[in-house]
Length: 145
Image (tube, rainbow, N blue to C red; front, side):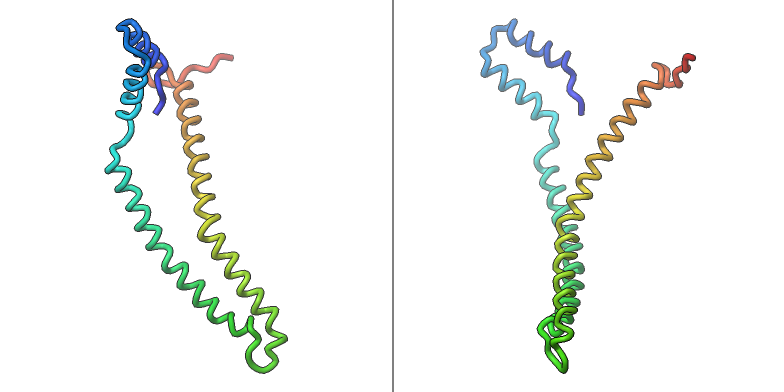
């Protein structure tokens, strides 16, 4: 949501012309800003929904990784005949599973958040571009040579 500086300036001038103290002006400006935000119950509902979805996705990821890890631990510890020769393979498996789990749980969601922010900025730029190409009646502006 874009702020309109003309409205803010008019609001400030109206407040000063009425002789309002600066703390009352700040309180009114704060209330004006707060009134544009979504209600706290809506924010809590969205966070609760995201948390439930995260837990739902988390369980299968952890179960698969733990199953593979439990299979790789005996190899990493070197149990069985000629276990010493398989120990490097087991340590690589365990290390790879741990690193891939960290990437899956922390890096990938962070990348999605960054990509979402980039997409929103590109959508805003596209909207500004389309608006600049259209006239007041919604038709494309004629290109001048």
